[in-house]
Image (tube, rainbow, N blue to C red; front, side, top):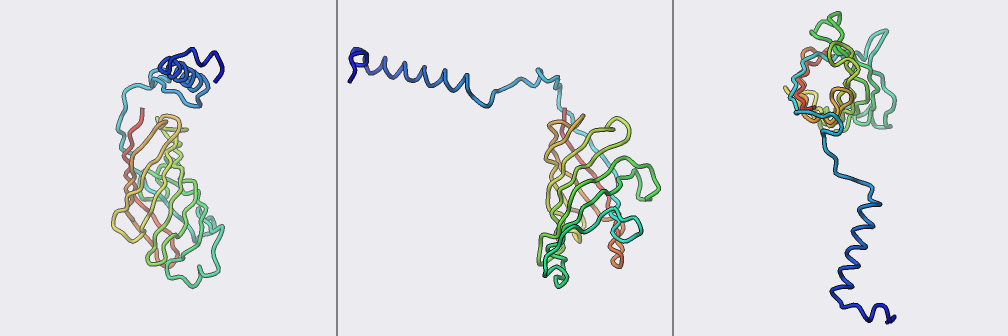
Length: 192
């Protein structure tokens, strides 16, 4: 053992190693605990949003189109494997000509073989009123023929930074021949 270490007691050596470890990890760490006040975050709020999602797959101007499918998709009674890209209008009322409040932009895919169960990956981008320019991120399972479906809200932007919550979807109308649907959404989200 080198002479410099032999003169140190084991407790002093341990103390110096511990001090060296903590000083190295605290200054070179990739994360820090921050105060929400530093970012201007105030008291958390709970907001309820209510709107209608218009998924138009059969028309001259569809709002959702297939972008991928598997070889067995056409043989599947659930459409298993189809991936749709959507830019669906969100309106204040079920009428497609009612006030536009935003767009649901993202993908949904048939992810179940035994029922119509969709994987939803959507940005709910708002274009109206106080929330204009803000968005919520929805990621979850949507079993289309269930009366009410619940999907998590996993984040957001703008006034919805640090958002978390859930969306409840309830089919308002569904045309089984065309696949076009209007879905009522109630979204409950905590945000600052």
